[in-house]
Amino acid sequence: MMRSLWSAVSGLNTHQLEMDVIGNNISNVNTTAYKSQATGFQDVLYQTIKSGSGAGQNTGAISATQVGLGSKVSSVYTNISAQGSMQTTGNALDLMITGPSFFIVTPDNATRNYSRDGSFAIDANGDLVTQGNGYYVMGVMGEGGVTNGATVTKLNVINRVSVPGKNPTDPARMIDYMAGSPTTQAYFKGNIDSDDPSLKEGKSLAFEIYGNDGKPYTLKFTIDTAKDDDPSTFNLNLDSVIDEDGKKVTVDQFEPIKLEYDKHNGRLTSGDNVQINVSGEGANIGSFNLDLSNTTNFASSMSGHNSTIYAYKGDTQGLNKGYPEGELTQISFGTDGSIYGRYSNGQTIKKGQIAVAEFNNAMGLEKVGDNLYAASLNSGAAQVMDVTTDGGYINSGVLEASNVDLAKEFTDMITTQRGFQANSRVITTSDELLQVLKGLKR
Image (cartoon, rainbow, N blue to C red; front, top):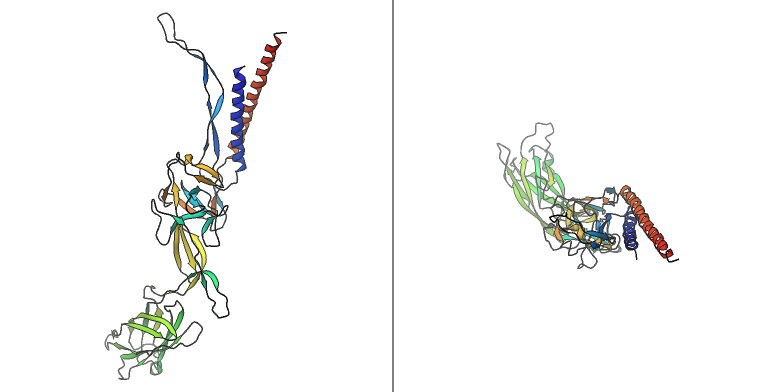
C-alpha cells in the first residue's frame, strides 16, 4: 500500500481538527472573556530507506534516505494572555479584570474553578454569584483585605434581616439593615451678649442628635442669666426632648449647667466641657460631651444686643456626629475588588473584597465549559492574592470581550481549507496510481 495514502489521511485528520478549533473560535466571538485557541502540528515517524554514512578516504558522506509518514496535532493551546477589549454594560455587578488574574468561583464552597467572566449577580441569600450557573464568587468578608495566600470564602454582600414595621399593623421587611450610631460630641459656638433681652426669659437653642437606638432626637436648651445677677454668669438648661415623630419624651431631671466667663476677656472659665446624660423612660439617648469652649461673652456692637450663639452636633472637626439607622441603597466596587455598601443614612462601609488567583503557567489551565477553567498539573496551584499585587485592577460596569480576531480566523480558515484540499488530492492521485498498477496484469 502506498505511504502517501496514509500520510494524506493523517493530513486530513489534522486539518479537520484545526477546522474544528477555528469553528469553535468563531462561534465564541461574542462570548464574554473567551480566550481563543490555536492548533499546532508536528510530523510523525519517518521510515528509513537507507541509512547515512560518514565520509571516507575515497568517498563523501551520505545522508540517510527517509520518508515521512504524515502529520499529527501536537497541541491545541489557549491564547490566555491576550486581554479582550472592554465592553461597557452600565451594570455595577459586571466586573472586568485588567491583568493576568482570574476570579475564583465555586459551586459548593469547596471545589475551585477560575474564570475571567465577571458577569455577576446577587442571589436570594445576598451572595455574589456568577450569572450563568450561580457559582459563588470567592473573597474575604469584612473590613480587612485580601492577602497573599488568604483563606477565601463566598461573599455575602447583602445581609438581609427582618425589620418590624414602624406601625403595629405594618408587615416586617427583609432588608440589609445598618444600625445607627449615637452622637458622642456636640458644641456651642458664638457670643452671649449680656444685654440680650431674650436672656431674661431664656434664649432658646435646639439641635438634633442621634441616640443609642440610632433614632434622631431634638434637644431644646435655654440659656438665661444666673440668679446671682452677675452679667458674666449664665445657666444652660435642657427644656425638652422631642422624638422623630415630634412627640415630647419623658427624661430624668436635668441639672442646669453654670457657665462663667471672664469679665475682662470674655472667655469661658467654667463649664467649657461637660458630659450631658439624657436618660429616662421615654428616651434612649445616653450621654455625649458638650463643648462650650468656643463661646464668648462680649457686649454686641450691633444695635439690639443680639446673642449669636448656636448649637452643632459633632465636634469642631465635623466628627462624632452619629447617624441614624439605614437601609442598603447601593453596592459598588473599588479597583482592588473591594465591595462597598452605601446606606440611606449616608454611610458607606466595606463589606468585603474579591480575591483573585494567578498561576505559574496559565496556559496550562483546562477549560471545563461555562467560561470556567480548572487547575491542572501543568498550570500549577492557584496563588490567591489581591488583584493589585501584580499591577492589575478591576473595573465595574464593564465586561471583558472575547479575544477572537476574526480576520485571523478567516485567514486560518482559508489555509486550512487549502491544506485539506491538497491532502484529498494526494489521496485521489495515489488512487489513480494504484489503478494503473492494477491494470498492468491485463
